[in-house]
Structures are given as C-alpha cells and as structure tokens.
Image (cartoon, rainbow, N blue to C red):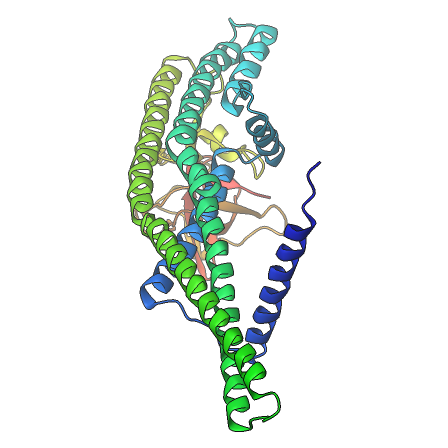
Length: 391
C-alpha cells in the first residue's frame, strides 16, 4: 500500500488552516471574501429549488403510496437495482373479496349478483389506479428524484469546493497582510547589525505570500465560474419539472375520468338489478331508525308524494281537527329528523325544513300517515314519510 506521509501531513495542514480561518470569520476576527451578487442570487435560487423539490417529491410519494412500509420496500428495491414486484391495489383486492363473497352467498341471489357487479367494477377502478401510479412514478417522481440524487449532488460538491477555495484565498490574504506588516515594521525600526539578512528574509516571505495569493485567486475564480455555470442550469431544471408537472396533471385527469366513467356504468348496472329491500315508503322512512339509512334519505333522492288526507277517522277529520286544542300525551313523544322540506297545505299542518329535529306524537284516531309535530311554540300535522324517528 502506497502511504504518502508528506501528502497526508500537507492535507492535514490545509484542513487545519481552513478550520482556523472559518472559526475566525465566525468570531469576526478575520475578513471574508464575499461572492458577487449574481452568484449569491443563483445560490439562493438553487437552495429554494432543492428545498421545495424535496418537499413536493416526498409528499407525492405519500400521495401515491400512503403505506410507509411499502415505500421503504420500494426504496430498497431501487437501491438494489431490482424490479419492484407488482402489488395489488386496494380496489382490486376489494373487488376480489366481493367476487369471492358472491360465490358463498350465491350468485343467483340479489345480494350475490350485486356483489359480482360491484366487485368487477372495483377491480376496474383498481386497474385504473395502478396505471395512474405507474405513469406518475415514471413521468413525475423519477425526474424529481434524478435532480435530487444527481444534479443537486454535483452542485453541492462544487459549492463545497468553492467554499474551500474561498477559505484558501482568505488564508493567503491574511498571510500576505502579516508579511507586509512585518516587512514595514522592520523597515521602520532597522537593526544595523542584521539589517540586510532580516530584510532579505522578510522580502522573500512577502514575495512568496504574493505568489500564493495569485494562485489562490486564480483557483477561486475558476471554481466560481464552474459553480456559476452549474447554478444557471437550474433554469433548465425548472423547464423540465414544468413539463413533468403537466404530465402528472394529465395522468390525474385521465385517472379521475376513468373512475367517473366506471362509476356511471356501475350505477346503470345497479339500476337494472331488482332491489329486494324495496318496501313501502312509510315503513322504510319510519323504521330506519338512527342506525340505518332508508332509501328516501339517500343523496339525490326526491321527496315522497304527499300522503292523502283521510276523509274521516273516528270523528277526527282533517277539517275539524283543532290543532291548538291537541295536547301531547304523557308518554309516547319521540324525536324525529326531517328528511325533506315540506310546505304546509293549511293552518292545521306544520311546515318543515330538511335536517331539523322536531318532537312528534300521535293522538287517538289520527290517520296513520300523519303525526302531530311540535317545534318550539309551533304545532301542526306532519307527514310520516318525511320523517326519520330517532327515539
């Protein structure tokens, strides 16, 4: 093994002088060469690009793969340069479970046949998700990763080298300054016995410091130019990332359009399947209770038809019922949630607003399609089909 002790000692000496210079700069005991404004702006812009690209990359990874264990697994596969195994999406897995359940429940039953239909479309949704994940990873994540792991590492390396060249330059300036001060001091207070030898040594030291400074300045300028060219390439990076961003949005739009199309087709298929759970409106609305959803409470459902008014029932006709004289029973009052807006047809009825809570009860001989509803000081008849009893 070729072990160069002199080179090792030289590198250690350079490292030590740089550390001393850096420490003195932080303490305000040494001068620091400032970079030109253009280069400083390029460095700030590059740092901003790196920071936001990293955040966007990490969050996009979370969006595409929320499972942290799966992300770690994919990371190791990439580092080992191996192909990532095909992973079943959640939609595909759900669809397969539905298909398997339909076999046990019986594909000829209403529930089983519906499970088959929904399961097939869930698998289609999962397939669309898989295509979206693959397209986004190739067209968006990969360019961002290439910048962070490739271009940015090169830029960081050259910036560190530039900082070392600046420290060497400032060390050379400090040495030249000390040599000039020593030479001036010797000239101001000459020693007549050793004037010529000491002046000669100091002059030679100053000349060596000047040469060292010129070399350091040349290396610094060369490295500053290399770093500047790399940093100016950030503009090209922005253009490339802009193109990738458009492709990512296009992939999202395609994915959501496919999902919308599949869901519309699924709804059409479900409308062709007979609903075994369909019952009378009053039964489905009243008996649903707080833990179940009736068919009338589904989003987009239209309110039921207004129930007919009975011509008479045990002497309590709609025209002769005096609402103000009706008193609530001691027991039997219940809370009810209003499912739809309802406009009272006359003064004996109570207008309703969807989602409000009212107190309801019945009185002997009253039409079973109607209840007495109370809201504060207001009281009137309300149709049962517009209500969901809660307690």
